[in-house]
Every structure is written in structure tokens, then in C-alpha cells.
Image (tube, rainbow, N blue to C red):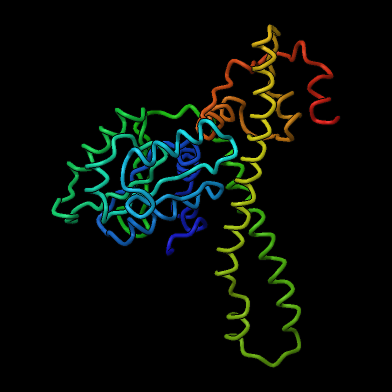
Length: 306
């Protein structure tokens, strides 16, 4: 893919955390532009923003809405089943519009100005698809490509997320990438001392563009997986809190106690609850509160072996 995560971060700047949040919360994202190759390239790139999910490509992995809905039903009943992200590429846009009603978790390519299976894709097409998705999914994001180096992202409806987690991930990526590249360059520079090589060769050796891309990808996947694993631990704990409440206990968890129990220290509690709802189809908002922890005490600690 031409568009790596590092390049997307560099091109989108402050808009990248919102895009990342939208993909993680399975808000449908439309990728619109006039260059089919770039539109499809970025559409596939966006699926890598959720590396813990299994990518399904429309018309390659499934061809009907009933198939993808059955996948989602299985997710709802089995926490251990791989979560999915759906990719709809330009060449199959007409088929997707004819066969699919609900686009939750989709990243859909819309090549403005192109002819796709006899359908002329226009700005009106984009408008109609956006309205349809918004009506069925509640929200929709549009990633607009005006040139290979000009990309903007907007949500049709305001997102209440603090974006703290996403911003923290981006900051960690940039810091760790810089630190790693500096260490590599120092070692390479040291190894070249005393050698009779031209400045051109030295510069070529110290050029680490490919390594920068790979480092970014590795750190990004590590940070996303850390978040997902922490959220999964939260699901385990909160499901037991819910059971206790169903048995008559009037107990809820605060952000501090929940985060201490699952070993997490970033983002607002409401953001985590929203992510859990998107990822595992569970709403635990009734099991948490902003006040102090009551009624649990040592029970919470004992569950985690502390």
C-alpha cells in the first residue's frame, strides 16, 4: 500500500485521532475522491487502523447482507470470535449499494466521476449514500481526497469522545519512532567512522525511510492491542459487576478503580465504555459511575489476584 499509517498521520495531522476513533468505534467511513487507485489504496489502509480485527472484503469474502449480519450475530454471542472490519472497494460500489442496507463497521470507497458497473458515480451519489448510511447507522464519516497529499476527515454528527486514547497513541508512535531512529543512526554513524566512503554513500546508509514506516506500524499495532486487551479485561470485570447487580448488589465501579484493576491509565471512562459497546456489543454504562467505589472492596482485588 502506498499510504502507510505514518503517512496518514503526517498528512492528516490533528484530524487523525478522530479518524482512528471512528474506525475503532465502527462508525461507517466513506473514502471519496476522483482517483480510483488512491481511493482504494486509502480504503484498504484504513482497515489497518484496527489490526486486531479480521478484514472482510465485500464481493470477495461475502456477497450478501445476510452473510455479514450473521458474522455480527456471532460476535454478539461469543466474545472470543474475531471482530471484523469490512472493506468495500470502488469496483464493487454498485453491488454494495444494491445489496447492503446497514454499513456499520464498513470502510466504503466512492470514486467520484468514475463509471462503476454502468453507474456514473457523482457528488450526488456521495450525498445519497451518506444520507442513507447516516439514517441506518446513526453517524457517518467522510474522508475526502482532493489530491494525493490533501486529505480531510469529517463526521456528519458530532463525536463526544475526548480522543485522549487516540492522541496518546499518536504521541507514543512519534516519540518512540524518533527515539528508535536516533539510536539506529548513532550506531550507523559510529560504525562508519574512519571509513573512506563518500558523503553520498553515508547519506544513503543513514536514510531510514523504510525503517521509519515499519517502526510506526509496529508501535501502532502494539498500542492498539494494549488498548484492546485492557478493554477485554474490563469486559470480564464489568460482566461480573453486572451479574452481582442482577443478584441484588447495588455496586458500580469508578474510573480509577476500574483502570487500576485492568492495568490501564489512559482516556476517559466514557470512551472506554463506547469502545466496548462497539467491539463486544455490550453496554456497561450502568455498571460504572464517577463517584467513589462502594460495596466491592477486597472482592475486586481478589478477582485479579492482588
